[in-house]
Picture 1 (cartoon, one colour):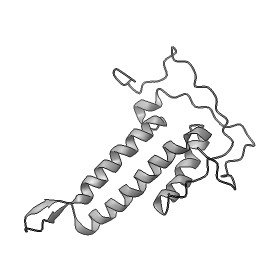
Picture 2 (tube, one colour):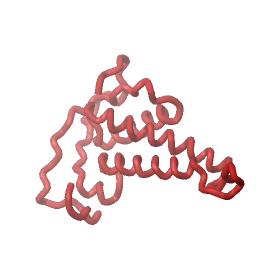
Picture 3 (cartoon, helix red, strand yellow):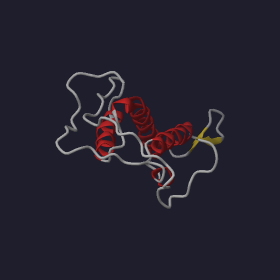
Length: 146
């Protein structure tokens, strides 16, 4: 999208509604997501599903977010353990490599969150299609490609 991001003041009447997707089930969690990434898949997937912000086509974007989340959590744990400044092999203070990893993961997460309409300015550009009552929010028993 080119140009300035709109201010989060509400919906523009000129924007067409997003087409309603079939929101029946959360896509299966990819096998490569483990630990924190898998937990975030369940947590964030449930929230996106509740607000009608995910369809079966969005599994790849959610996987990208969850992988970045897992990297961010791991880097933050290492930063708590070692701090933001460490000694280089030559003995001089230097920025922890974990700080760069954490910052990169935060940037990646923010980009995906904007795609899902989960920032204040992005929310003003998103029309929510709520799931109909009675639809299952559980993940399918067999993995579905996304």
